[in-house]
Length: 93
Image 1 (cartoon, helix red, strand yellow):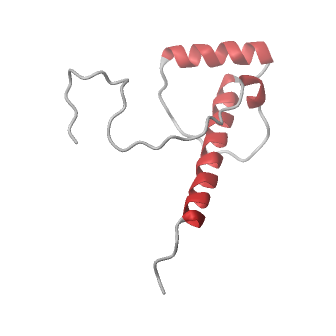
Image 2 (cartoon, rainbow, N blue to C red):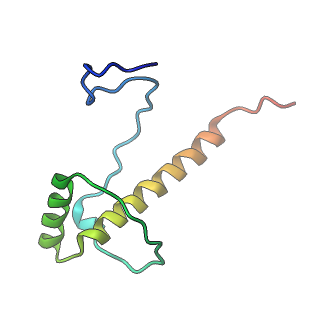
């Protein structure tokens, strides 16, 4: 499916899967010590400003809050994938 440039990029297209809202509140993203791997990413300036505000309010590091958010998201996606695999009926006899 090809998308035209005049379409609104905020409107989804294609095959969509609705997932449960599982994102935690900023206070739940307070840093914890775990092994890490260094990566470089680019974020929207408004998103970073929001995380800096949340971090300041919770006396935490905004980078650690983002890292914990990504960790929680990845964990949720892995659990959802496991449930999907279990739910599919076997076609082999």
